Image (cartoon, rainbow, N blue to C red; front, side):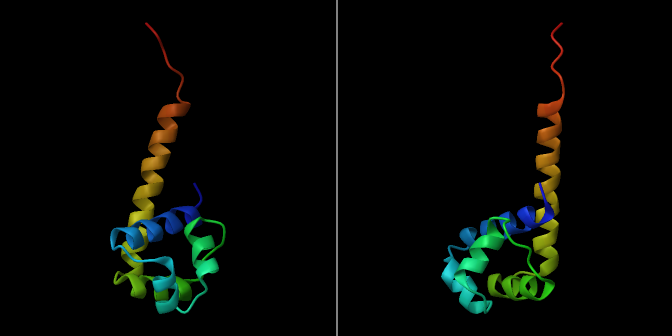
Length: 90
């Protein structure tokens, strides 16, 4: 998983947990709905300035977003590692 995908996933997760629509967060962050959607899906990189505005719109810090994204990446890497490991039948 790429970092932009983990950050996007985390932003969408935080937004939906707060029951916020994309249009609401996009408006508060001064970004188009399409751009926010693309970044949430990991299709576009997010500048540090935009990340700060989105974090503010969500009422969280950039650090909280990045920390959660790190956990998402670690969990996925762990899961992927387990799936890639050959199964030994004794």
